[in-house]
Length: 337
Image (cartoon, rainbow, N blue to C red):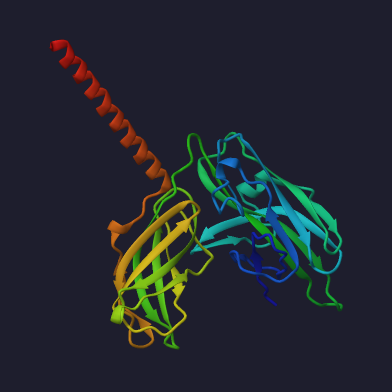
């Protein structure tokens, strides 16, 4: 029997039976009580970044030592021996996926979790230290792995299936000399659709133009509809991780019957502190199917908070230069008189 692992990074207890397959990621959705894990330590410099509160995200130089703590909670209803370890992950096709079992890659081989096994009674919790020792010869790149908490339940009958449950915290580690690679993305197009039941959907296609993987979320609003109607905001489907250089659609389920249009679609997408907006005119098909994709209004693209800071600094520098020039000219005029 094929069963799927699931990777979470939540404060709530989680329990997902699994074995023998790549691990798909579920982002910030409610889960039943069970085995849980969450990140405890957040760097002061990243305290405002919502991604850094749930995932281990950093940029370090070769030869660095990175340390974090995770909290593990047993809400399974019985005592359990919990294995704690790191294993490989990858970003592909719009998802952050943990690889099968204890598959290793460079990042997981650099990562040590202490203790490696924790015995927890029902309702008990403990902390574990995560240490990532980056070799001095490590090449410049972003790498992915996960810190896992795992329990194994023997088969209830001879010859039965062993149940394996694991939950984890993602690791996004950028390695290289100098500053962190800039994160950026563009919203390229919208596609208006109706599913087989006639429910309207919008696919928003985004492209990662920066040097770090992104976890996208956002909202869509519809305005200027027939008769001046407006609708929304509608939340984007969570769980889309956009790899470096990748282009992927993000689905927005509108969840109600809407006139075909035309509508003005306004989208705000974010990854951490990075925010982008776009706008386009959409008309939904009369029946099931997809309309032609519409390119977004690039002029509405929002500006990264860091670019705003740089822009403000340039403006202040220019203003300072004008003040200095004005005072110099005033002194020259005074001397000439």
